[in-house]
Length: 461
Image (cartoon, rainbow, N blue to C red; front, side, top):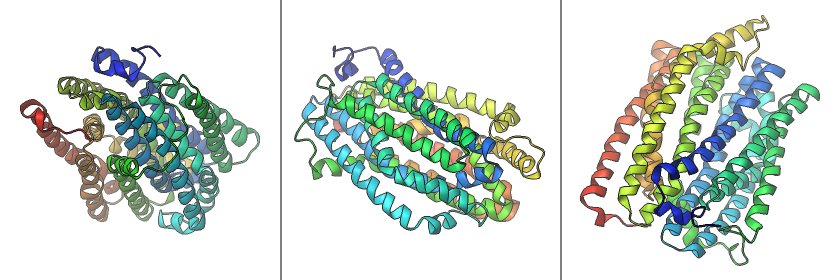
């Protein structure tokens, strides 16, 4: 590997070129990853029916919960690895890689067993009805069987990106998404496996990609690779991974709580199809926020390395470039959803003349336009929260995530729907986005002042 292609270039190369080099593959990978849910929803909606869309939406809280643990390990280890490489400690970075594998195996097995034992009870708690439960149960049981594969796949992709191989991380995600779409078509449309076909397509495609990742990390020319001695639990590393990764864990966990409450309120004030409408609207909005997440993932190795090397001017320049692009992306998403809601929703639901399909389309169109009202400023909010995580300040990142999800959204979900009905559920989310963005701006400005006025007070983890 040349110096330009290694993590060492993060401290010297042009920041705009670095951001493009790392962010573009990460953005493409994140968009491709978000297409998992979108493609699944399209095939399920077109090939199974409107109620199956609701069943798929009901699995979101459990998916968020399992993803929370994966995000804790993946994001925490990626941030630590970037900082260690910035400090010139490659051995510590490889020990982190070994512990990523061990943690993902343990967490994957534990969550699989727990989820399978209490699956029906959890789905009822998440808002399932007698009509939607069979769809949700059939899908989630298969996903849980592949939980270890999912955790390993996402965790190793994070490590591959910060090890200096963003293009390989992107290509692996592409392989997984393309294979997933092909298997969706085969299992759902040809073999008529129903919603189970979507689940099997997801697990199999991730398994194939995991095999490719293992092969890359086992190659002797890989900058960070599997070596004998790194596969031992090192409690100091685990503690640091969990500490830094607690912010994304809290984000995903709080998202789980919010989705449960959203589903419950939607079912009470709008019925099962309102839950399906939220599933569609949320997946569309999620596509644009995932683009921003890819952007922040591209920012992460640049910020982490230069923070570890105490090059704070490069840290701040990278931050502002990322903010500018993030706001532009989410503003574009806002315009698409507000101007073309019918065309977007029709991707998921076939206008077959049935009452359920018509009601689902109308509910999804209105919900989508309300959900994205504050999307333009969400880009800034996402970058700010991830920035604190990338420089090893998880407390502030956790504060931002908890404030949006629990301090703002939950009270709004409890107070608005009883007053204005189902629209109260939809309005809760953009109002919370606005309030949490104000808080993010205040915390970020405070951190920037520290970089500018008192840089000696900064201590790398």
